[in-house]
Image 1 (cartoon, rainbow, N blue to C red):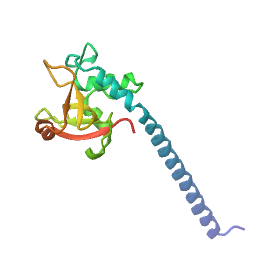
Image 2: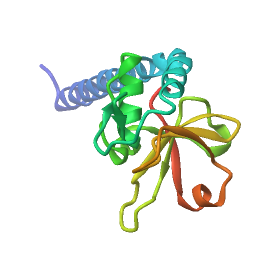
Image 3: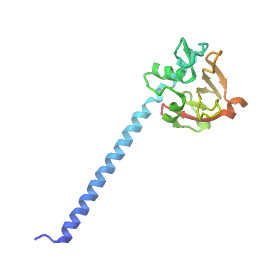
Image 4: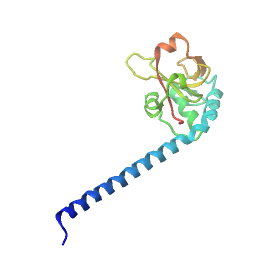
Length: 165
């Protein structure tokens, strides 16, 4: 005959066992997601060189090809050339990226700016090193390199993020 105490112990132990399995699966899932996402670090030189090779291309609102780029279109194109699919607009790129401290920027990380009054993130560029970034600045201009230290960009910097680590 089985006592009520042993039935309750069995139920508690079974719940503990199930919780342990769920926890292990959760940890494994997180670890595999992280390692898969961390597998793109080697693409940094590729995305930087692709973005730099677009210098001089004209700005075109909504543009995603060398015929003309807007800021997020340049990033979209650059990552696509490296075999990665990223969101199309700067705000979605900001949301999809992992935050990076400014003093820990690596070439290939993205810089996000507020250049329009009410919009939180309205511009994106790619950090290339030495406090410089490549971007498609706006109407009438061409893809170019700017310095992050200028007052204009310092006042508008919202944050930085990576889609590669």
